[in-house]
Length: 151
Image: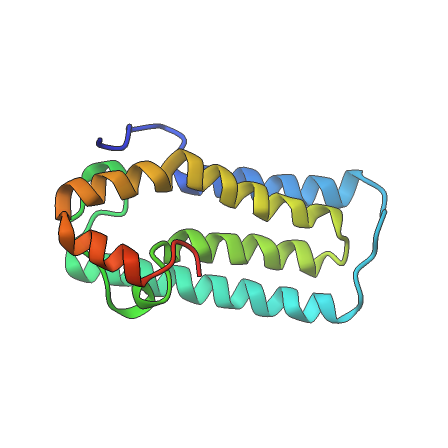
């Protein structure tokens, strides 16, 4: 099954989630404050997510593989960041959102990155995996058995 084209591509979901984190931080009173070191973890998570995202996007461009999931893969990506996660771009986005939430020092916005990950998995990853299995067959099945979906 080929993933369905949609106007709401993952970066749009990322932008919505980012706005939601900021809105929750601004509009909802502090319920549970995080320890001070959470801010440092937030910056580290944002940095790691950004590096993961940029490194993976660069690898896609180098191999001529389209970023849009419904455009079809050019190459089965199994090296680099794909040795650790089958979805390093989505993981990078999630880590950036987690970092933004941690940086704010409040617990409630931390729900958003997990919702983002669940929506991305349901809306994109499952159909992408089905498409990759159809396209690459045993090579993808073997890769999928060695590498986790997220981490």
